[in-house]
Image 1 (cartoon, rainbow, N blue to C red):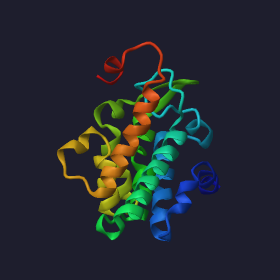
Image 2: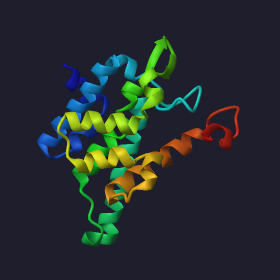
Image 3: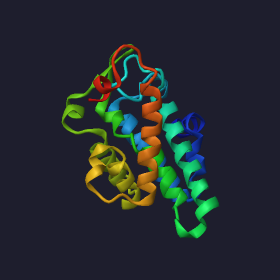
Length: 191
């Protein structure tokens, strides 16, 4: 049941052509939901970031937007560069969907509508927990790399093309939404 609803909420899962990779990507989401205590309903209330309050975009919407931005970038590469800049589309989509999956154990809904970091989330940010969840579900190291390298933690490694695309797709979405947030200056909100 959960997988069917997840596929409805995030249809981008179905864009992963490799059935085994798609199944492991879904399994990672389900594991993260279970360990974080999330329901399909609460996922739709969960803000994609705690840095913007109130956050006008939920976790599911941001996941879908980042995956779609990454897919479109890969399509542009294919159309213009051809085989000179190869992109593994399945790895890109899996990593794009899973890059923030660790937030399901980093965040919690303390009371209705109040989202905070968990005690564990204060110690381990979502790139770390996301990689751990993906590894437990048997996802390849190429997907784990995308998860690990999608945020500032990845600034110290040489990103693959897929990880670079997901990193930039994530920040395109984040910065566009950040500008909608009332009150604080951009520097105060991200610094």
